[in-house]
Image (cartoon, rainbow, N blue to C red; front, side):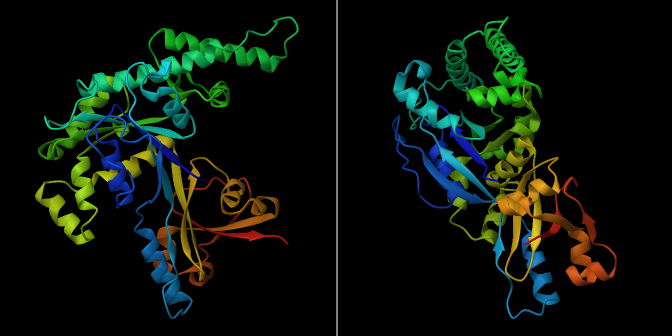
Length: 367
């Protein structure tokens, strides 16, 4: 499944700098004035996964290959969306165009300014909480415009589905009237309604606190405090120095680790963003390992083996027979598929099996 995350925020908070770091090259145009980004820049970023290298080594050994099979990581699509300003829902600052870009992504990554630099223009930025609230308000107002266009059905002649849809619309409008985003009013029943309407504040969110380098050491406390202040989960907030991440992208992996250690930081901000994206969106990764390639696949938590097979190819779901499954650690310890089968560690699962993170799977498909 394709996962897309839209990077949003006020102008000059570091969105494009962060985007450049994510892509490890200058693909977004960075400039010190509002609306340097007009059309959204899109980049595909691999998800770091050390399991792939180990799987590749096991497959090479067990299958007696001359070289390691290719590693294909899962990916995340990041969309660098131009800076919003107050009044965007009314078209201020090219707002309508930018809001339409946000509708197309799976999740929203808010970037808020928490750094001190008088040389960077503050275009409406005040403080992290206020900056976040400005964007949230604009998105809620855009949602309200969408909701107000919906028409109440005739309660005598309407079908059950039409009445349920209107009930969802009323719940969403009440939430916004209370100053709360639509996601606060979501449940299993109205989730699909919100998705069909393309409501912006129904999307999962994360917040990047673009902070000074000296704040990174205390990043965990800053994340906790900000999460509590704005009423989100701790996992949804990430402290990052976007300029540092961009500089790190040009270094070798070893040099990156060395530099981060000097700052008293264990992981790069980019790794934290991707890991927390999976957590926020309720995603897992399953793995395939064969002579042609070892690969990580993205799947929603709670999905069945049938659904997982369709992620590889839609025809797999139509011709599904079974899924041979072994956990990642057993696959490593036993040395591949053959030994895992010989030791009785491979399970044959049906289409209703709930896939777990780290499952190594081989699908059996009919002709």
